[in-house]
Image 1 (cartoon, rainbow, N blue to C red):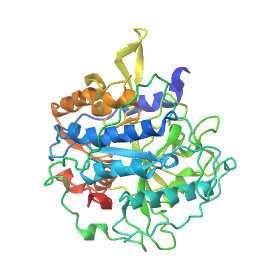
Image 2 (image 1 turned 90 degrees about the horizontal axis):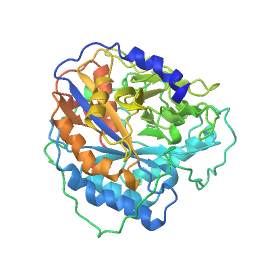
Image 3 (image 1 turned 180 degrees about the horizontal axis):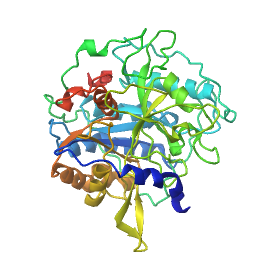
Image 4 (image 1 turned 30 degrees about the vertical axis):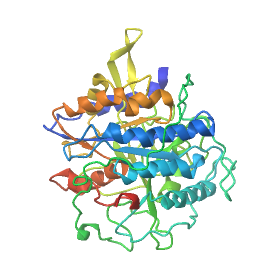
Length: 449
């Protein structure tokens, strides 16, 4: 069927049967970035100019806008493990240190194995931690990094990577159409960045009593199957899969190879996956516009095709929390004057964030079942592509934030980690000002403390 709609259209139509809005709702806006400085195999000078552009321009842009808590827009940079260069992360460290966002894990891989994937993630976690990134569960105590896991072997293809030294092959980016690119001239280095309002950059701590583990070293807010590495806690991270192929979900098996990837992510400390939506790709799941727990089946790919909705009064189950962004049909932007275009929350130069798109994002009402006044809007971009600069931190992005500020809801800018914490607070049945739950389970990374 056209655009693989047979996969996701039934789920989309079912999701439209949700109840009315609770007015005024709280809307949590999460901007995640497949942040790839080495996209399209640039020169080192061009790659450095891309990260420098963000370091020097994002603070000036973000300081123009604030949510109801007084915080500027938050940007979560999902950095590819295979593109690691210390200087790229040093630029992001400046942004994170001054309160503009956080860094999580992105990964492109193919023909991989569970063992190599686990080793790759563990090694990259150590590298990110050296820059002050990644968090740890307060209920589990101080994190011990560098230990290897032994997840169930995958039935995927043999590895094309080297575990020792992590020799990666840099693949093409997430199936983004090839377009003409304009160069960026190098700009002077800026050592001191303007900071957002410090009074609102930290939120009220949650009582330690609410965070005590109930069984061994496990937190009651996490999956009961979470491994703690021989009773040692893990560094925690959010994840976006390269080329959308989470859990070997592409029909031809390319760009992954690990059928038990959800288990590997759980074992290495992943708190949630933020890959979806991926339509019109065949990697898109049947379950859409949802926050849910997925259980891995090592004998088959795409185990996250379905799952159990997170709900008030429920509990963590399965292997991994899946946090989806909005997927819809946009009848205001028609193709050939008759067919609706697919809205998949991509913010790019060819798909700017217009008012009709923003309205559609909110109307999907993605949230925790039983908590209709909390709406989560997760959109994504490829921020290191020059054609996307305007829509991520330029004029088009400014219009987006201006429009968000004008809406009859309470707007909260959140990082991926804060999204997870708010989801867990809603699941626990907590009420009141959501700003106090930004650090409910997972505290800020060291660089933001």
